[in-house]
Image (tube, rainbow, N blue to C red; front, side, top):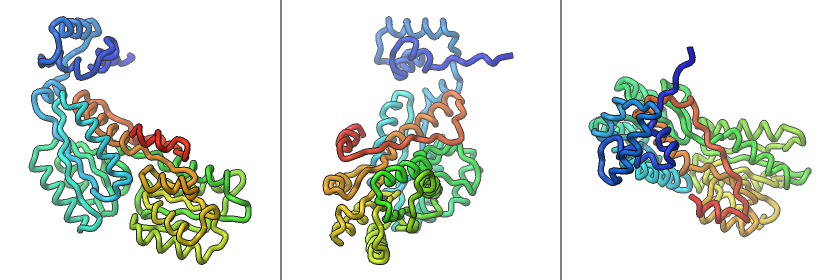
Length: 350
């Protein structure tokens, strides 16, 4: 027998062409809408066969607390992700969803900093956790979350080695790598080679970018790759590695910077008088990057839509906690190509 689809508040909102917030106010008896509108919503809910979700009803009375553990480093990426999280929290405020942010820095002892954040969150009776993993062994952290049976969403990158998570929201990193290689193929002279800069080979999202880059580089007209270089997301190290590469390889014609360190790479290219000779495909959008686009160093940048990633993480948790909707194992966001001609417009839309 075919399973009957349960009617949700989203169905009611879609039927009437109104917001989820308005439907929620009507069904939970909150103020802020007219009685005629409330009657219309309740009547539509009955007609569609809507049944009150006991979990959602409870969450409407009690605050839904989401613990968010994320870095306060690398603003080229995480400040946009945090913006997306805050925009979505504001949208879900009428549903009593509250985000409790805890920050850590790669300049601190990561294990201690993240453990402290987790301990503080667990004392606040959180309903779920969003974790942005960076350089750290997370086995003990994930074990504690699982023991408390707290739903976990990974954001920005995945952790495949330990335990379970509800889903991982991240960019389609393999596609990002493929797009970068295809762009480079369009301008790289036949006698030149390319190189790739990543943060750390042990980060899943960086591994996926490398795989995608090499797969496309070896497709059709092959691109010779001089190597993959780890910057540890450190600007000084990125500059040093770029300078060393340019001195050792006179045939470098393109560099794909798969993290937010493109400014250091571009500065080194400019300092060595190689504008127009070595071009960069970068990642994400920020002020310095636009300047290097205007100088002709950055040909294109692969925008990872960090703000959308943040929004989707919270939407996923709300649907899971309030309606029991099980998300896909991976929630992948499609990357976007920004060129000099459209980068300002893309930035304005963030």
